[in-house]
Each structure stands twice: as structure tokens, then as C-alpha cells.
Amino acid sequence: MAIKCPDCGKLLKPLQTTCLCGYQKKKQGQEYVDDRKCEWRAGELRCPATGTNSASITGGGPWYCRWHFNSRDNFEYSKRVTLDMIKNGVPKKDWREELMQNHMNPQLKDRRNS
Image: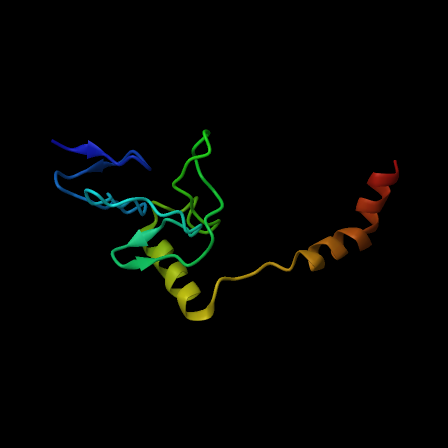
């Protein structure tokens, strides 16, 4: 009898312990360790980014990074992104640059003053 993946709801085959979305059934006796990392996995391959997004409304996980949260069902993309982050490091956004652009943008300045 097939069961549904607890993360994405797709049907899993009997005895299947992983899903393309990154879900991995924990082994009996295995405890959850909150290491603040993204939960996307493919076998031993795991995303190195910080897990910041969860579909849970109660504050529980699983937690995914911004690259895997909306692409959990796209295995090839998720794997490519993960391999790239492992090779080149997790991309960091420079918020100062964006804030400075918004500060210098006259249209935004006009809206704030009106």
C-alpha cells in the first residue's frame, strides 16, 4: 500500500524511504538534530545553506533554504543548485547595495515624502 510523503503529499512506493522533494524517513531510534541547515537531501548529498523557510504554521520543520523551498519537486534543479553551493559556497546577498539603490531612487523618495 502506497503512503503519502509527509512533506509534499506525493505518493511513495511501499518501503520507499525518500522522496524527490528531499524528505527522508528517519531510521528507528534516530533523533532529529536541529543544525539549522536546509533539509533537502539526495542520499548522502545535503544542501549546505541555512534552512529559513517552512510550510508549517506551528513553527516546526522541515526547514528549507530559499532555493529549495519552492523547488522541492524539481530534483534536477535542486541537485544542481546543491552541487554548485558545495563547490562555490552559499551565495550571499549584499543588502547594502539594494538599500542604497532604493535610497538613491528618486521615484521611491517621492513616494515617501507624499
